[in-house]
Length: 380
Ligand code: ATP
Ligand code: MG
Image (cartoon, rainbow, N blue to C red):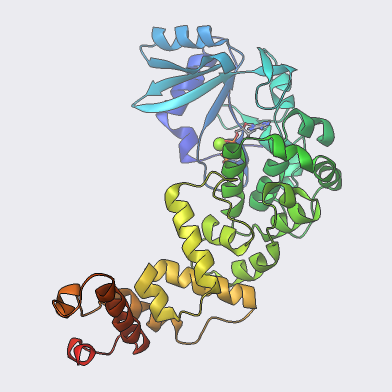
């Protein structure tokens, strides 16, 4: 089995791999890049693994005149810069002791040991500089079947790091076969250990939930999270029922994790997922909009075309109704509408709170007229 792609041919990648192999070491691509190349999906970050210890990697890079940065040397990672591009090289590791994220690791010279501490068999695939796939754990058949399966005993692996529960649902959403159902052993282990997710940091949970909800169709995974009790621990009060209808209504608009998050309802997740201020503000607009009576034009006028459209999509999903017939033209009109009055137009007759209230009232009338009432009509 071989992988190909421009990214593998890239001079920087080749140079780093050969730097290692020419010195008699193993130099292998690993993880997401190999998995995605095999699935013919876009490759984001490229990870390189080697049996050479970090000091050796640094010495080899320096001898070749390359810049090296010890970006995570205590976990065995150094970054080699080639043509201005960073390349992360991590020494094979094996777990000595695991306690959540802070596993005590030792360097290893065996790729089998490095593979054994990875989470899923489809994430434990390697490839050499020529694209030849190295599969120490027999993960290829799982990948071909698009089956997300834990490396080793699912329960034990989850207890080492409860984030793997969320990663299981995330990788299923992205790479699993939606028609095949999820691995039964894994689901049972997720259910048995669901409460363990409460020990995770909110940053880690937020990161995984974002990525899960950004999948093409996260609905089956989120439904399984609900069924296993995981959702109740991560987002108490969330209800996934509107998610599948939303995903169905979304095309041609791109998946948007925040819109999907809004579809789950429940208490404000700003804190539990560590949302940024901007994300929290958008989510609040979406949540308020779904429950409001405002029409498409008003939504677009007040929140812009995109948020307005997202509110309509969410409403339609929650009510399991099609989108209103004329929504696109209404959104387009509302998004560019400009209220023809300014405070100065009502002065000096009115001032202070009275002025504000009158202006708001006139704006509501103008919105109600479909943005038709002119300045003169509003003032008369
Ligand atoms: P993506 O394309 O979404 O980034 P990825 O496979 O690169 O997918 P990362 O989260 O970047 O995912 O992790 C890189 C690799 O490190 C994984 O493929 C996996 O082998 C390993 N890994 C990451 N997190 C864990 C974890 N919590 N437990 C075990 N292995 C992990
Ligand atoms: Mg990655």
